[in-house]
Length: 498
Image (cartoon, rainbow, N blue to C red; front, side, top):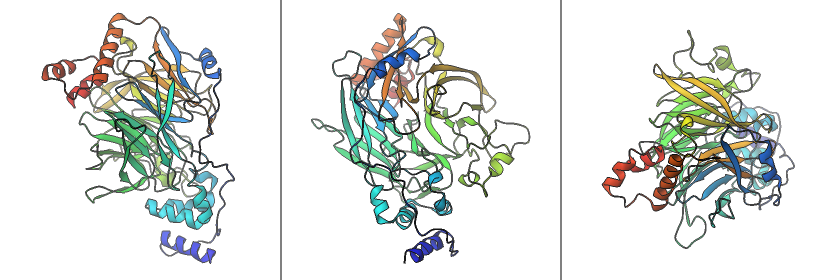
C-alpha cells in the first residue's frame, strides 16, 4: 500500500509518470525538543570583543548575550529601544535541506504549492515523520534594557508556536508602532501588543503560501522593509511561493526567489521583482532605491549586489541548481550572474557587482549615530560559517546610467559570525552574532557599535531622534512634521512622511 500511495503521489507531481526509487525516506535522527536549548551565561561574549576589528574611532560593547537570546537570525528595534529577535530553533533539525534527502529531489522540484509539500512530507516520511517536524518552534524574543544602563537585562518570549511541519526559519522581523511583522515560511504574520499583557496578544496570518519547496536551508521568507510609499516589502529565496492574495488573486513564483510588496495589512499583494536565488535582506537608500545581496549557487558563480527594480528579473531559476539536469544551465553558460557586459541576455536585470560570500543582513547608514564619513554606506553581514572568514563589509555606490556602480568596498567589522545589522533609535549600530559554526550554536550575542569620542553634533542629533521616536509622531503638529522632513536621519524623514 505504501508503494502504491507513493506512486500516486509521483503521478500527481509528474503528470502520470510513476518513478520508483524508494517507498519512504527516514528523517535524520535529530533531537527535536519542544523547549529551546540555550547555553548558560559565561564571560565568552565579553572576551570575544578582543578579537573584533573595527575602523579607527569606533568601539564594540556587549549589549546582550545568552541566555537572553540564542540562534539569532534577524533583529529590529522599535521606537522605544526594545529589540525584537527572530530566533531559530528548527534550523538544521526540523527545516530540511534537500541535499540531505536527495531521494525526493524530483518530487520536491515538482511541488507547486505548500499543500503539495505537505502531502510530500506525509507520503515520504509518514505520519510519524510529520509529527517529528511539528515539535520545535521558532521564537520572536523581546530583549530590553529596562534600567537604561546600556546593557540588556530582560528577555521574554514575544511569540512562539511556529511549529507546524511546514514552518521554516524565522528569518525576518520588523517592529513599528506596537506592531511586529514576522516572516516565517509558510506565512507573513502580524503580531500585536495589548496594554498590560506580555507578549503578542494578537497574531494575524496576513498571507500564506510561501515555501513551495524544501530546497536549500536558509532560502526562506525574510527581508522585511517599509518603503517610501508606506508599503511593506519582503523577500523569499528559491523555495518559491504560490499565494492567494486577500482579494483572491494569485501571485505564483514557485521556482525562483522574489521580492513582494503589499500594504501593511497584507492587502494588495504584488510581485515586485523576481529571478533571485536567496535575497535575504532588503534596504532602501534615502532616495527610495531598493537593494539586496543575493547568494551564489556554488557552481563557480559569485554573490551579487542587486539593485531591485519593479518588474525586474535577475535570471535565476531553481532548476539550474541540481546536476545532472541542472549543471548551472543558462545561469552559468550565459553568465547571467555577472554584472552588465556586452552581449549579455537582454531580458534580465544584471547585478551591480559581484561581492563576498554569504550576504545576509543588510542596512544603510541612516545619517546619524556614527560619523559623517559613513554617509551613503551600505553594511552587509557576510555569514560564512567561520569566524575568521565572516564579518561586515561596507559598500558605497554611485549612479551609473539607469543603475549603479560600486565606488568602495571595505571590511567594516571582523572577528564575529554576524547574521544581521541594524541601527537603533539611539543612533548606535547593533550586530547580532551567531557565535560559531553552521549548526545551531545555542548561543547568541548583540553588540553595539558606537564612536569612542562622539561628535557633539552627532550625539545631539541621536539624542533628539531617540526622544522623537519614543514620543511618537501620531499627534505631532504640522510644524514638527515639516521640520522632521529636513532631519539628517532618513528614519525621521520617512516617519514624518508616512
